[in-house]
Image (cartoon, rainbow, N blue to C red; front, side, top):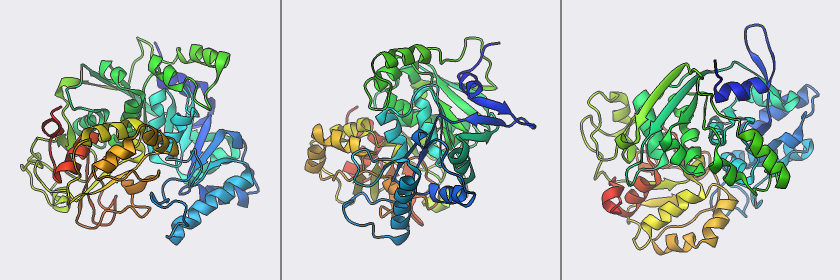
Length: 458
């Protein structure tokens, strides 16, 4: 019987299988940031351990940092302490660190692929659930807890049970106005926020292959929002061209040899998955969430389902059966490790070009890295945004999770291109509606929930 892509990568990195079936899994790269690493550093130091392979660890500050005035000290004491601790710990253990102000700083799941650290066939972990993003390049990537971060520090290995396999196939051409974010929000709405629990998902099909690499990252980023351990997409020519010439990717003849290896990373034709789903791209419309988990999603012009969770609707201030179209919005956030890449900023800027931000809207347009920020300015996107009444902020996680100054006030509505809409996720009492960039842009210029296909004639 053939093997899945997960099988091929997982088995190649299994050092041994322990009694009970848990694997000692070798990790090619660990990403760390300021939130989940301090306790792990303290753990190895109390035990008298060093970091086994510091060259295979990459650190950046992202969650706690402000997205304006980054040249000034961080005002919030705990955030400042965590950012400073990361810098000190990395210096003490010889780990490369991209701190605030560094030209390579950014959200950890954006700079990894952007700089070429993330490569096909790798095993990758981070003390952050959205590590699944890196699976878009054909890697086995997943989030881990603090004790597991410590394991990798000490041994470059982790104890892990091999997940079951799921394949989600999407075929067909996407309709006008539909983005990668809509694809994954649609999938989660169909299989629910727990439908992937216990599985590692491989996304396949002509629709997935048609996505750009940045679109694929958006899809894999949110694979955990249906409960999956991670998500991945088999590498192809788009993957190889994306990596070609990137700073930390192989160069020259080494790159050609790497590509020859990467071409072997696919699920065999006779591979059997534990579970399979198939979807038709023609069924996918621009999406928005109405509740308090990412599975509570619907087409932007649809009505809230009659059987929607009453508790979630009470929190959101909505009613079953009503439409969201026309409802006023207070905040729009474009950014995060889901939609903070240059393609996202390009799309938003082109949609709002020649228009004006609605007066009732506070908008945070946040690049995911210094590289994205520099590219946006080089392309003049900052000027397009400014002419439309928007400000291009500085890189960071921003309003995704309310661990910095970018918080949505209680009771206010946010259309957000981030990945989670849990109660209080963007601030205590904040009401979050997840969407793609086009739906966010439509809200930003109209001040309400609107169908981008109508607003922008898509």
